[in-house]
Length: 404
Ligand SMILES: *[C@@H]1O[C@H](CO)[C@@H](O)[C@H](O)[C@H]1NC(C)=O
Ligand SMILES: *[C@@H]1O[C@H](CO)[C@@H](O)[C@H](O)[C@H]1NC(C)=O
Ligand SMILES: *[C@@H]1O[C@H](CO)[C@@H](O)[C@H](O)[C@H]1NC(C)=O
Figure 1 (cartoon, rainbow, N blue to C red):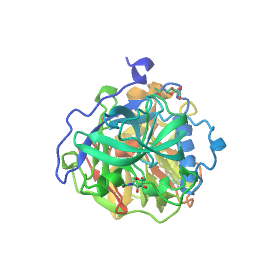
Figure 2 (cartoon, rainbow, N blue to C red; figure 1 turned 120 degrees about the vertical axis):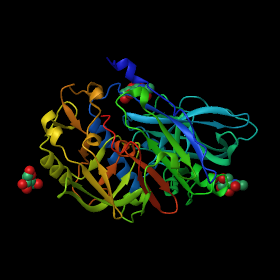
Figure 3 (cartoon, rainbow, N blue to C red; figure 1 turned 90 degrees about the horizontal axis):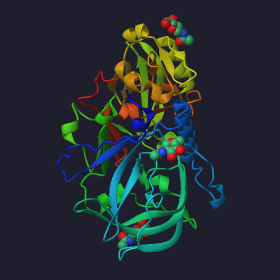
Figure 4 (spheres, rainbow, N blue to C red; figure 1 turned 45 degrees about the horizontal axis):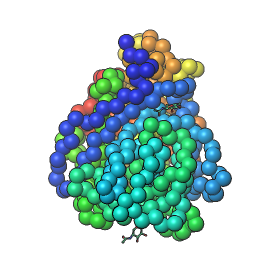
């Protein structure tokens, strides 16, 4: 019997960080599920997608008093531990694939050491799930023993909303998202952690890779981030790369084009732009695509969870979804398409139902952000975010896992 209390703060660190070629740095990542107060998982993800849409369109935090808009916490988030300063203070930072600034001070305070260099600027970011404003400092950031980034721009929060149980955020998004985050305004981006790792020669490839295993037992959940390459031990096939999309606002993020079909021949989503975002929980698709998926699966909308729901008999007939990205097709099995049944009650569902993890993004195809391949996608496909202008996906040993 899994209790809500037991599920509230579950974390597990990947057990064996693997040493790999090309001097990448693998950081264990603690995944957390915060089910407290979850009313509607779909509303939460759609709110994030709307905020990302506005952010991608260049609608950043404009003035200090824009700041207080309450946005709910993410349900799944993952924490990486970094050291800042010399001697270093350790911080647990939420890893975010759709933002690019790094900031601390939400939980544990910033500690001034001889390596601290305040710039006198303020820095502020409005996220899908949170907002903060604070003072910019340049300091050293330590990812792993011997892997030190000098002169990293770090926001030290004076005010933050929507973040709890972490000390701040480590941004893995493209550097363009940092434009307009400094006050007084400058027309420059701020090098991200990945940028600095690369330009300072700490990693050889301007890449960061993310992987998680699917699980219905929280104690099995684990993940890792590899900075500067791909952990070959984690993939079970070639990495298919696709260029980043030019369509706005997906082009502000890890955006690319894909199509989705259901089964052998039912088109769901026509070729269009969207993003991969491991900090969104579900698969979100445009409203017309969602209608086709609902029709194809025979599912009904469940008002308690906001998700589509099917019967065990329908599940037995559920066909795979196929995501085609730059000519490579990725099979998303029936098992991948459902919420882990052991966790139904955590999201307000009933144990006897089967819930689908694809939801509507709330707008028809043609918005420039017509899908979000969220965390549930990253659990099935190894994801490579490459600043050279591409994203890559590969099968893992877990791609066809029947764990849900
Ligand atoms: C340190 O970083 C800041 C902002 O990221 C940049 O403006 C400055 O040129 C950097 N200084 C050095 C010595 O790299
Ligand atoms: C979990 O989420 C609830 C509701 O959104 C929030 O009040 C609480 O602070 C969160 N707890 C953690 C540990 O993030
Ligand atoms: C709904 O699905 C049926 C087959 O299950 C198909 O014949 C019909 O065209 C679909 N309608 C829409 C609007 O997609």
